[in-house]
Image (tube, rainbow, N blue to C red; front, side):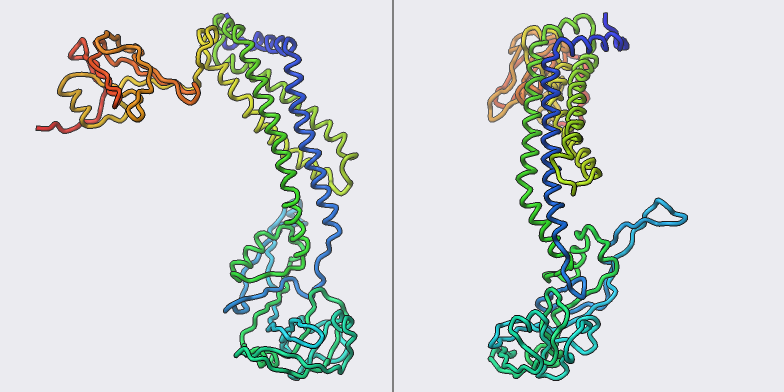
Length: 501
């Protein structure tokens, strides 16, 4: 007899089985090793390509961190909550620990944006007040606009149209009634520094007169700790709550746009990796099912000799687990050796280890999914089921009473002193296989009907609650009535009900 605690015998049996079925062991290990290698190296190359292109993208050269383009009736804010936070190492007595540093607005500026049509082109100008904090801090040639007929031109716009100080031109605009009017403008200042998104400026009073609007529709923020942010998700969500419907331009907008585009481009590659794991899982499942079918008689002999269900589960689990662990180790080692040659140096080993951990978890998840069904079959199978190729259910349910009885059926059992079971019926058609028909005798605990469902995974049986004779069976509603041989036989403890008069 093989005892439950005889782990030494089981260990020797596991080793002999691995040697005996070594071709299957090596095939499963190869599937795991190949899957993890392909997924890890392919994922590393995608990450490496993305990081290599990211290094070529620079932030916008603008004198602020965030530009907010407001719409509708939105107004510039003066009081700001904490926009985000980032982790920073603490030195000194708290060495080795990190703290959450808040990201807050340190300065803000506002302007009124409107469009002007000139003989040169149509462009957007900003109406800026003289007290502007950083919109008028750059180096210029000339003086900032103070009068209603003066305009500042950024360096790139002045160079594009070869304009100089004192140049005069006529600008057309639409007033608040939608009527076109003209305005003579003189170039009073030209920028000496190049900024991305730099715009022409006029005085705020002139912009309000031209547009007929008093409310400002642009706000510019300088944010403390902005350069230390690495994840802008929370930051953008906070801005979206403060300015619903507005558009935002950040210094890091080019990088964020590239990362979003890169995720879209690489999404098919992620599906390829997912399909690799699916293929591995299907192949491993097939191999384990074939192993179970080929070893049915062997397993039946073991169970006849006394091996317990949990020991049978452990036997098959150890064999499959050894193949998976061996394949995973080979795949990771091979991927590490090829990592330096197939990927660029832009991907660090820390990132490679992070990808390795993710792939290990994915391999374990799909591998466990693949082997769990054959393992449960080995545990649940009985000797007769193994020898005679019968259905092997994983879930068994037995009923010797009605689970949810109706009041009428309870009353009928009470008044006629019978026992009733409810068999499985759908649309007036019985799904149960009857073993005892009306007028046949039954013994208490005897199976009188059974049913397999979910492809044989679930087995349900109905047991006779008492010794007696089958009175009737109604296929329309599944009512199965038994007349007890002993009229005083105990009945299931059903809930109480009130008898009718």
